[in-house]
Image (cartoon, rainbow over all chains, first blue to last red):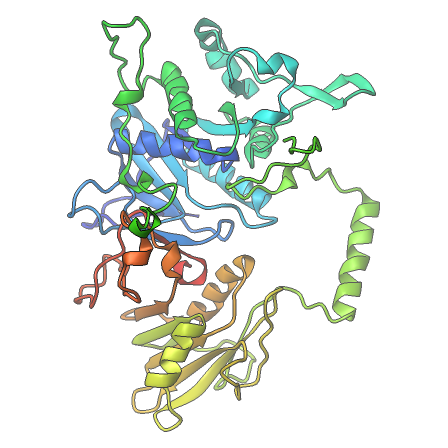
Length: 271
Length: 219
């Protein structure tokens, strides 16, 4: 599944032992994917390979993180892997939707790759339909987290310190029987499947998600990536003197591919 | 999501979400029902989503040698296929060497090589004077779940060392993302994408961000 980039000179395949794998779920508003774009763009991560898979709709374009003429002609496809060894971080970016009936095969192949490459843990960025929140969820923070039991032991305490909210379970049969609770992540794509599979396979996985709706999801992406940063500290937060809150939005670099997200320029004849 | 009239509907999503995650575990009865339905579909003439590539020089049995190919030109879509028909193909210099047989909700191709321009077809031609030059005219729509299969079966039959592939395709101008409005653009125009390994001069500008190519040409 994973094909390393040929960096020339017979270089060995990249080693991800002990790394944190950060990846998005293709979910409502594409928030996870936008957040990953911000991480890759800001940290100027190097592409180290891609996934050769029949589970995603094919697409190709030129380098979405291009900053100048010189680096704008590298081809980019639907599932690529970037790495930053100094932070022991490897990032998977997924750029197209899943093909019908391919969720499970993709999850299985991905998790077996995670095991074989000996990644220490997986952090999944996702989102869920805001309109499906219950009365309590409508109040307070729209951000939630989930930890597999293996990761709970390692970082559960840190989540308490950060005052994060765990994703609530909902009744399996609402209105009939409120005691059976299940995890329900509407609009989350492969999130629930990947999480439950990780739990049963002993993989350390954290899910960070935001409740949102379709629309201009750029602000949602910023909120989610700042949430991630509270824990992983990928970029330093500079406390601004004018206000006491640490606003990191200006420190994330927007990639060039985010241009024209909502259409072309207007025809002058319109006015 | 509540609509204006107060009914609750599932919100459509750009992320193309399937509600697949809600599918419960199959019981033995479910499996049995599904098997019966599959049998009935094939009996009634609903074809499965297999892609079959039939080459004229192969008898179909045993291990086959991969085709030695130096240049492979693929035209995807009706416009690109028509371009090849009008300017390149003729019965003197080119011979038909293969056909793709597939079925999906949009089109069905057959194994006949005698096609009309208005048919949906996917044919392979070889240059008689240089049999390593191959051409493919694919005017049928290859569905998402068939694109990978098409790719594997076609390229699986070829020797890939020293192979140069050129893909011709068209997209609507309205899909092109640019700062100005597309009304003022001089169309039609050419754009290209190329791999690092392609060292020759490209005859037109490269496709700018944030434009992308999808479906079979991307595959």
